[in-house]
Image (cartoon, rainbow over all chains, first blue to last red):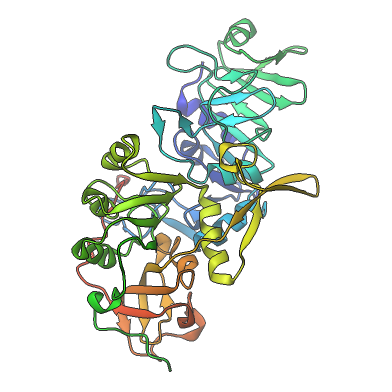
Length: 217
Length: 233
């Protein structure tokens, strides 16, 4: 079974040379730590920066340079700043190659819910609806089940949707799954996790074809 | 040169009244018009509608206006850092309209650029698109979203000149440029106000035509919401 860093490590393998990548808050943010350093990748943050670098050294933080999680950051050579309309032009115009975000629920048709629990949590969607409606390559990073042990990979989402039919791949603590027209297609198992365990933790239709290899991270 | 400079925040906010709709720049606490917000608190006007990506934190930014119950309605994309906001929203004291962030930005830019509405894929098939016109283009579904209408825009820039030209710094740019010229009157506050001619015209982010009043701001706190640093190895 993977921990949060393990999930981020596995997703980092999906980041290819020449990609512009938008990372969501939480596990997706960790992906930047594991991207191979022999490829060229630029990270976009939707509040208005391309070419994000690591956190600043103590004492060098700048209130005017933050990411979408409101954390202080630095920029790398080649970076640029822009306004919010331009930033979402990059996203809506499909100039960003890969979007990685968290989710509360994903349905077998690719629907995603990650912004609201009616009556409990209403923080807002931020940029998530724009991101999922526009990106062609969307990877969800999440735990396979919620704190109550219930599956987050469902036949149909129960929470208010963020976007419809948009998720292409899911990486959880248990598995790598592709979303196809037939449902969730199991591609890889996490180290030490059996196909049966993944099946038991998946409420939606799980397609298992051939040998499911253990992932390498 | 058309002079946009006013003496200070009091003169810059002349004409603001209860019941008006305001746009306020900033993302989180980054690039917010601190002086204009302080003056709105000082003026004590009520029943205002605020268009702003976030709602500040409990004791800073728009949170200061929330504390005094001056805001009737918030139009935002993310409001997660403010307990008083959540309390007022859940109790029904505060009306809240949540809008996808890119749609929020574009509703400002559309108002600035003279578009009454535009189609966006964001929110299609979700509760955001309920009651709105939808349409298919090239096999994909889009939602019709209308431009904002506002009485005042309050923006904050790094540098500006007397002609109202603005330059922003870092990610403090965010919603500020899109909100310039998107309301009847745009008020820009700047960290450094210089005479016309001192800024390089090649480097201007927002031309002065979009700004009606500009003033030299003071006492900027520029609070950091999430200070994240790494250790020197």
